[in-house]
Amino acid sequence: MFVIYGPPGTGKTTTLLNMVEKAIDDGTPPTSIAFLAFTRKAAREAKERAARRFNLSLDKDLEYFRTLHSFCFHLSDIDKNELMGTEHLHELSKRVGFNLTGKEYAEEDDIGANSKDNPIMQVIQLSRLKKEPIDKTYSESTIDEPFSVIQYIDKAYREFKTANRLYDYTDILEWFAEHGSRVCPNYAVTFLDEAQDLSPLQWEIAHILNQSSQRMYVAGDDDQAIYRWAGADVEHFLDVEDGSEVLSQSYRIPKSVHQYATRIVNRIKTRRPKTYEPKPWQGRVERVSMPDMKKFADGEWLVMAQCNYMLNEICDDLRVHGYFFENRGNKSIHEKLCSALLAWQVLVEGGQIDATSAKNLYYYMKSGTRIKRGFKSLNMIDIKDVFSLEQLQQNYGLLATDKMDWSMAMDRIPEDMKTYVSALLRRGEDLNREPRIKVSTIHGSKGGEADHVVLYTDISYASDQAASSNTLEGRRMMDDLHRLFYVGVTRTKENLYIVSPIDGLRSYQI
Image (cartoon, rainbow, N blue to C red; front, side, top):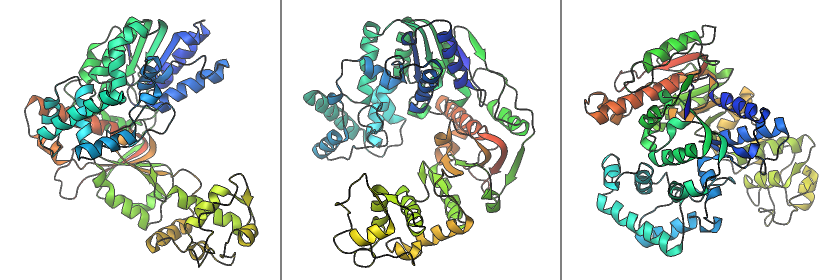
């Protein structure tokens, strides 16, 4: 495996995509190329870029441009009807007396049901990804349940799958690790992105791919390996090198931020030393006791902290000051309410709205006051039709008139939300666009960037305890913490604002 080390902003994924294009230019059939990414977004980007440039079919010519899970499922003999779904987890939950459900995948190349947000199932699945005894995984977790419960549910879970001939998310990887050498095609070249995030089980798959490929390139950055808690094996990534290249120019990080980033990354004990150049302008790093709300009026912002609860106060402040923002992938106003507000504006200006917008609008109106009784659900409308205000009034029970503003027309909106929406509209926020301000944990921000970054240095109790521990695990946790704040700092394109706790306790020193 040839390793491409990509420090922050150096264009690691773009480099891989350029290599894909060169391989095709040199005559390599697209069906002999595998491009495997850790996220659906990266896999889709590679696939669409190659398809556009070479006029290729997304499905026929580029069938091996996938996430690692999707790739394994594609080559397995597991049928889609045999995948563990949320309904199965609900059934098992009733049998064992514990809630085991999580989020269900929605996009087409997602596989099965997900339970990673369930602490019991997280321990069970993590032990499989790390290929270690479940008692070891349990001992390193923070779960409150006794180990006997974990053992009981693990056994029940396995028996349930066997009895119903079902496979879960991890089963797909385990199947390929066992059978992959038999079913894996021979590739001219294979690309694997974000390799620092691979678990021991996923590394087994990577080595099968390496044996099946004339050339294999893995790309990643050990300094950005922040998912060890989810099974990532950064030490394995550092051991696979068979030739390497370090991308040496960052197109994101300004000089002042680069200085702080270098100071942080040099604290990591287990790493591959590497240097890279910042972009040629200075930027700014400023230490503040609290963010200046006035500065959020312009530009793109990314606000980060180690844990979600550390972000509650800034979210409240953003609401008070009338800013439209995104928190953990969710807009500060529900998509349905955004749709309803925009729909009402269109109607009072004499335009037409589609059926979905009309239903969203009616959702925020009370029956008997703004809608005639019996019309609330709008079940009688054709989903393909469009409607004016007059048509809704004449045919679909609308009682609200164009003399009413949005707050009067939509009388089901809670008063605190009306106050927030009013503040948004006074500020002139565009609810039809993606929010300029994104609030996220540092883990959730990986791969993102913004002109202006606000980074809270508060750390959790577990991280604080690790700082005073001299055990092997304590040193690993400190490396994890250094990597985490390195990732946070290096999201910055222009200005970095470092926010430290007022009392200085449980704070990462940048």
